[in-house]
Length: 213
Image (tube, rainbow, N blue to C red; front, side, top):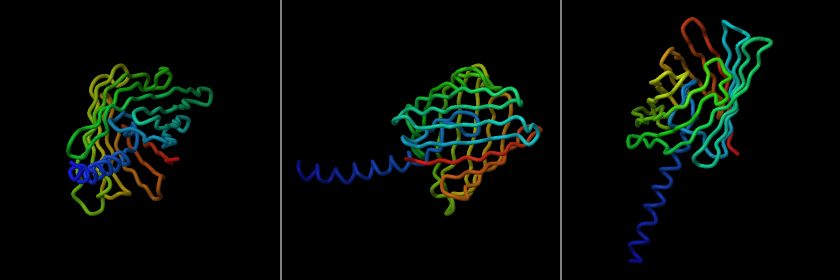
């Protein structure tokens, strides 16, 4: 029995390392704006600013953090005009993280809980499937597919996808049940992400920075 227990320790240790490596890949509870089955890691803080090149007054700000091992939350700021600044928050419970080629991640939560932003509030369920990469340049960034269902502002089914070409460049696309947003993301430095996105007749630019304490 002692030998069996000793042999089991390396296996459990390897399994734990694999689980932690999968968890460390989680970027956020959002793809662009739709929720996903991922979560912010415990102790991770991310800030992001997004603005429209067509409507210079429309700016969105996000400040999110992982809370424990199952929850994350994000403060929202939206500037609709020089005289209309509003705030709200997102909150999510992550039931399970996605395991590559095995099980999807599953999250439930509320987007814009105070129902103040232009898109408005939604209660949702989101699941994210992670697929093993098949290239040499994106081995640490697996493709992801998100499917979900929401109320009110998400208006039913929503879908999104992340397709990394390298660990520093990926394509993003999502449909929140009433509009399509797509574009690309570059990561020139650790923790820094730059995005250019296209939605109908406008271009969105985004700068995000993530740090773990």
